[in-house]
Length: 276
Ligand SMILES: [Zn+2]
Ligand SMILES: [Zn+2]
Image (cartoon, rainbow, N blue to C red; front, side, top):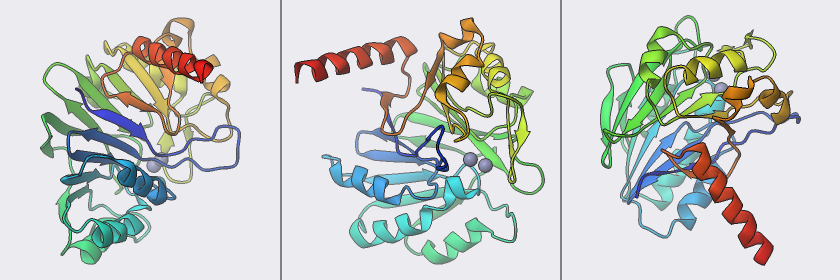
């Protein structure tokens, strides 16, 4: 059985809600949590409490220190110490700061005795269960703040989570090459745009660039609230559309899923619902 990804973060197109990032990858008795944005603590708690299996250890990776990727970490830390003191928790985050807040130092000071803190950079590699996990720097931010894409591979299949990204540069092309699934920052369907904090790409450009790297499926995530899913899909060319899936809150999928297997899963789900 391959690792399973549960989408915890929320993306609410066409609303005023802000998107927030969090994905839980589980394999056997281990969890790898990619990003812990604001407002996700309750959902992570619900996930952990509903897991039938005991959890031995939790590895948390913060791709970059924007609030929609890191702000839930404080309350999650308090919860883990109180209710899961026996679980081994390791946290990878970069020590770069923005606007005078150095999350690495702040979190290390608060939780340094309870959790193991590791600095995240391009040379970071570790094992998560049977998988190799590695990282590449993306061009989401300029200046001091750094953002990293995460790769999970079992030697045959590969899953990449880009987190926020401005464009697919040569570094990322190499990183995603031949991947089964790239979970990609959906960016902006109209134009490449700089928000207050960082850059996000133009959807059709970044999707096409990723698919040209022999990637089988692109899962779009981190949709912007001012656009609908249709806006995103309509911005893609017909051929690319067939390899693209839009991720929703509470989606659960095998990290190496093909679009086809997801469609079969959906059909099975609707049959079950029809019977019920
Ligand atoms: Zn960001
Ligand atoms: Zn973001």
